[in-house]
Amino acid sequence: MKRANSDSLVAGFSLIEAMATLALTATIILALSSVAGQWLPNWRRGFVDLQRADLLGVGLERVVDDLSAAEYVTRSAGAPAPLFEGDASSVMFVRSAIGPDAYPHLEVVRLAEVKEDRGLAMVRTRARFAPTAPPAPGARPQAIAFGDPVTLVRAPFHISFAYAGPDRLWLSSWKGREQLPEAVRISVRDTIANRVLAASTVARVRVTAPGAPKPQAGANATNAVPPSGQPKQQ
Image 1 (cartoon, helix red, strand yellow):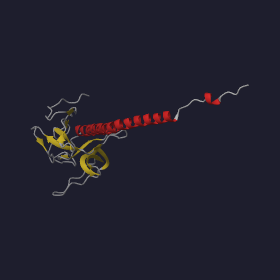
Image 2: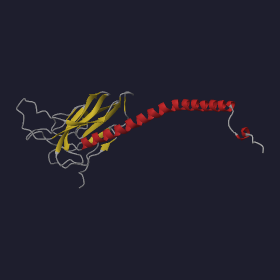
Image 3: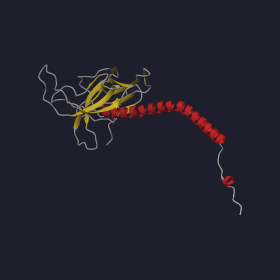
């Protein structure tokens, strides 16, 4: 019997073939790394911008809903003006409490810019509304203890408010008036691009006297004061 040649049954790569394979693999990896290095920063930048836009939309929706629900409520019996104070960077008002476990009651809501680690941010705080005794002549009203802070809009976006009454003139402050503003304009500025975004939101605040019917609240994407609306349908 003849012994079979074992070398003829062994298959594989030569050293030259293995080196060529490694060189080709390295070339492919370098090409993919170059493409990924150019594509990933743009993808990450676009993802961050999209996330910022989504968060901005959610925050603005909360601001609009809150302002649209503002009610004519005085701080104390016989007070000549409702509890509504606003300037360019903050606004305070009374509205019905919201939340899945909120029982019917009123709360004071304050939207104001505060300084955080990443810059200025629009923060929502609230406090349970409780009527107070009329202050003594010359005395300041009792301070309201706000809590439950929730950040609605963060840098680089900056929120500012403007207020309009029946005369349809925009003002940067609304304090001590005997009626609520008919509209509140919410302007959004991109501090990085240093420009005001194209769309500004107008939230209607329409209750102007105790017991008056409350028209349906809404939002308008223009700078004009919306015309008087009709009472909300029951």
